[in-house]
Image 1: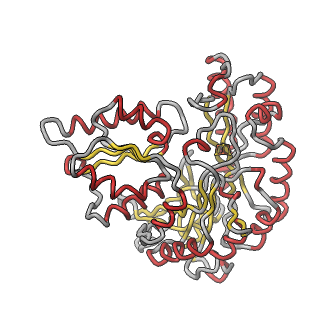
Image 2: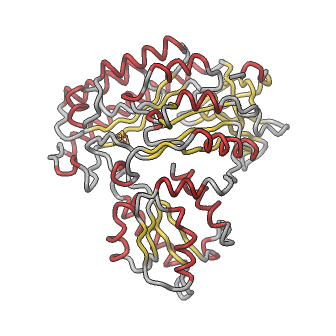
Length: 431
Ligand code: SF4
């Protein structure tokens, strides 16, 4: 979502004649869009500010603005501690960025803008064309969260659940496709909680899939509680919807899920997986895991490992519990650090073995790949298959934006390498 927000910040600041530069020393204004999901987020801000200070030593400093969730959660603290920062601006207030920059150009005092103006934000953004021109583009459809998992900062930094209207989303999706997008990844902190005047994510997917030149739709991140049958049916009916679902589970133990306030059980999670496989047998899953949550016993942890093995997640993001200030879990007694670390190592080994086996099985298989860009080195093109695996092929022809069948020849943990076998008949991709 920060990538989407950063692109929209660029669209906004163009209005006041700012353009992006990749040469730090040329910047008149430096905007750091931050994430607060794990520990050390604030340290990273200071580290980055240090880099800017070094670059501008003996020169007049650029306007320095901290955007995103660190600004939301720790704005006053940042402004007090680091005088080099001119303004902090929260994720629901960045439509005010041009005013803020204009004030700072006039050398006003440090500014803190961290209200939850989500309606005003999108009203404002809707008046500005989305100029992102990537083959695979992001589109924020929903923001915020009402779930209040005990470890998570999102409800405090992004605010309550809010869904954008279908009409404005169709307009923006069309803009992205006109700019060249062939895949749209619908974003939301709780993307499947999307609900605009009774229209759900499945309705939105159906509408977006009618855009002619759009070939693929993805969405992330889902919550099991909102995984309703209509969304499962969408995977059966919409050929443009890709068969990889990122469905965070966090733990394989019902006891820990309850302690986390995740609002579902493992049995309910497995039921969703079962239904999805029934309607779409080639569907795959990825997930997020917190290892060593306060109170996690070895038996709880072993249940998480068992779940990983049972579902065979083809990708996973696992971290030791990170206590975030302001969340209920912050005050809980943590488990022994070494135990948590040992468990993470064990878990990641199991996850890597599953991933490796899955990838070995892909060798000599043919997958459909949407190519996103030519790589810097040689005539190599980068794309992704339906399950979001990175695929690289060599080609004399420009493959950017093309959907091709690729035979996989080899792979490593991160990338598959293959050769083109044929172009895909796009009629197969009708909604
Ligand atoms: S559902 Fe997701 S975003 Fe919401 S509180 Fe839980 S982990 Fe955070």
